[in-house]
Image 1 (tube, helix red, strand yellow):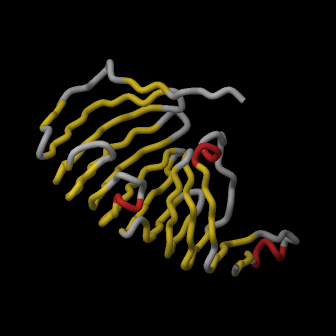
Image 2: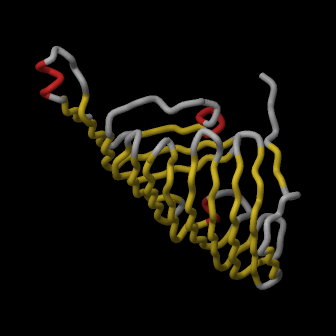
Image 3: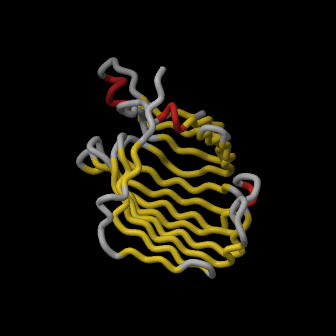
Length: 200
């Protein structure tokens, strides 16, 4: 780890880190635990070189390699290798609202879980603040097969949605494959997924 300090604050008798560089760090992120936090802690800009991470959601675990880029309270630009493909995340925080996109290419679904097959590409544009979030996703794949299903071959899903900690509202959806061609081009006010609360 390399840290740079602000000389101006040192003259004032204060020790403040200007930025950090982490080389070969490893992170473990449990999404169920991280989403329960109300606010993200303040931290200086962090540059990451050749990092790795383990992402956990319930029983699913995904390992991410070769993480490089920059992360701060106001912006993020990260590239990584995941599930045999590549992932790029770019976002900025303006007026307490995060806006950005995530692009994944060449994701090997067989590395995700047992029963999945195929190669997938993903493009997500999102916006998030304290009130809630909204996103649009474009997911395409080839040679696809889901657990306990026949082969889908090529498929594409386009989804627009918004929500908060309690609900996820699907606004528009379109799905097309060799077996199914379904498109809804208007708002779906009755299609709502309510988050399940667990008692502690």
